[in-house]
Length: 303
Image (cartoon, rainbow, N blue to C red; front, side, top):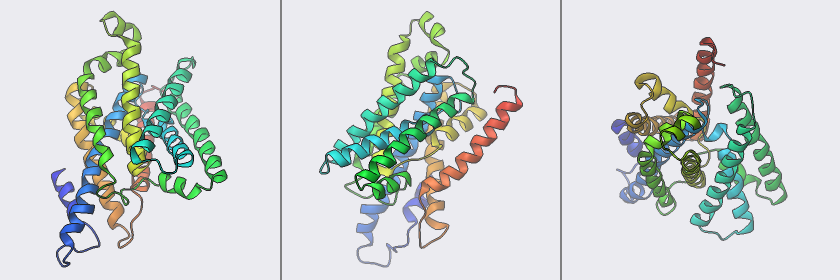
């Protein structure tokens, strides 16, 4: 991971060694971008892990439950209603919408009697498609379609000094997830088991939902949608290390940072001097892993 972060700092079309303002470019653009990769990678990977525990489903993460789409709708609403809103104001709108949307998903899930492992993410993606359609209609009527398109193409291109600092909020989210790791593990065993061992199931689910909403809303405001990151990383770590949540948490962070950094490097170099959104690379990788997990699950007869 250290090598990947070093490559991230060294990669760019602007030569920082042969220009007088190279150090300024390095300090204002490349360092913030690399820090954003670290923060966003850790936050979204751990958000996926928390959602998988709460729903007891390995196919669930913020982009397969509609949480990201809700955050985008909240961001769009703030941009239209309060055009001069600060980054913190936009983040607040995205977080509130993400929390409400995730709560709607969980409430909808409780009413589904047939909760197969594949049905749950399908419900989430259908809900996300509906929210995305509402966002598109809203954007068309308010002449914000271009902004919506930029958001859908999650990218670290626009990350620079003075614009990314709100991402440091996710450090608190990561710390809180470590703090609640044991209670979230109990929730992952089901409501009856969690209640029997003294865990307040509803309160822990509410806390987990709030943490996911804060992480998703914050990352959405700064870099946009990062599809499948929260799906790929927890499953890869679990396949190699088992399901011990507390010992897996550091690995989920590290693998998440490494994966998003590798995808960003690929996005920056594959058609250089141009750059493609990192969401495109993550989408391709995530879709392949998603299909592989479905095949693996159906092979076990778990669907």
